[in-house]
Image (cartoon, rainbow, N blue to C red):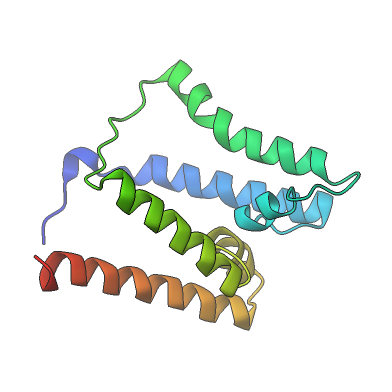
Length: 143
């Protein structure tokens, strides 16, 4: 195994992780809500009175953050090797998985693990193992 030193970004990765942790901590401290993206989006369908504003602003921040970054530095090139059908199927599988798993990687992996939630620890382990298995199968078994 070799490291792609050109794309090795430990400092920006650390800063991004710290910002995600800070945002999750502020949301739970100031709003009493877990920063699980699927739960935040799901709470808008249908919206509840008095609850939609913070959810909309949080999701808007996710969309606007890359635009703010692009104002300072060019965005990295995006290269996806999958076709539209595969992307749609993957999105549907992730959506179904978040419903069965009662949350997504951000809710379980960032917030739940930080709270030492046993359910979130198991869910995060399942996410990671499923990712390992998928990469192994796609790169070695079906190659």
